[in-house]
Image 1 (cartoon, rainbow, N blue to C red):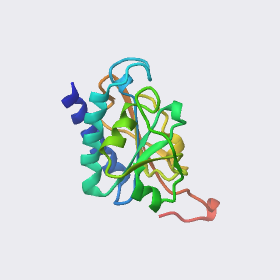
Image 2 (image 1 turned 120 degrees about the vertical axis):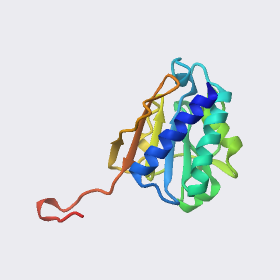
Image 3 (image 1 turned 90 degrees about the vertical axis):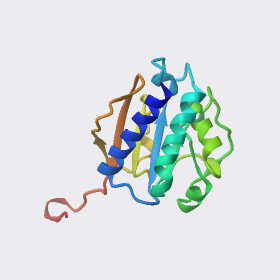
Image 4 (image 1 turned 180 degrees about the vertical axis):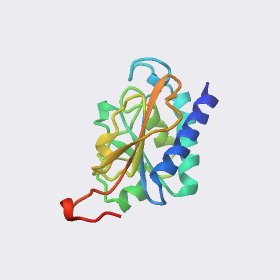
Length: 181
């Protein structure tokens, strides 16, 4: 099952990256419920094994592209995010003191703390996420830039969890006399 999950996230990330034109330095928000992947209610059946495989696959995707992953914690940690210290500095993000764990932060956030090079937890991204993937209805929208656009991908589920992706675009301003490219 874990290999199937890793393959699903890999394909989903590739499609999302193509449609959102992710570039080096962009923040990619990842929200994931391993409970939902297992077909259980969010927050009730965390799986560190699934989280370990997912985070490894996400990092294998992000690192060669220099995309900055931001792993969302669960509601018990107010949906704070695990990021690399360098990303937190580059984006001037506010660090908080907490250690995500299954049941209080989530298995994926806990695994991100293990697998990132120099991880820390930040309170929020100040609406700077360029794109995001939400596995299991974890509600990542608060971390994306103001104009989020749904991205339709072929992968609709990972395990038993629904997958929803979004990209962002700049705001259109200026009214009916404005010219847009």
